[in-house]
Amino acid sequence: MGDATTLPDFDLALSGGGRLRRADLAGRRTVLYFYPKDDTPGCTIEAQEFTRLRPEFERAGVTVYGVSPDSASSHDRFTAKCELGIPLLSDPERRLIEALGLWVERSRAGRSYMGVDRSTFIVGPGLEVERAWRGVRPEGHAAQVLAAITAGAASA
Image (tube, rainbow, N blue to C red; front, side, top):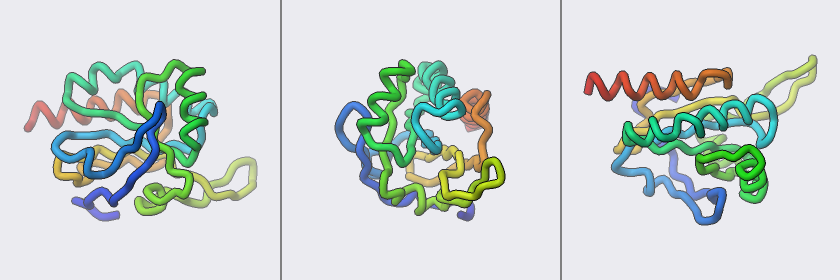
């Protein structure tokens, strides 16, 4: 993925019901963070940190969505169990995940497997990718994204 990439088209199920399409994001800034699996330690930390900072993202005019290959019903259970306040998108066929090059070979304990490269994208009002982080560490990442947004807003 090069610079100034336009977000690929998508139409995905949202936690809590409904769907979100690429066109729905036009006209405002959005954060899409991609994570491997609901209710796992790192993914839970990341989701809870984005939830905690949601009011600050909203004050900056930014909506945050989490995206994983899990089903919408899995997202609903994860949201309820961990008291998450951000909508989660379900990409079970990995269409958006693969279009962004995030379905990659990973390894744990010497075993290789395919999985999501934990990544975050700031998407601008024209649906362009303004900034991307790949291979993210969950702890403190939401604050890092918020700092990039507020620094950008200050210079805009």
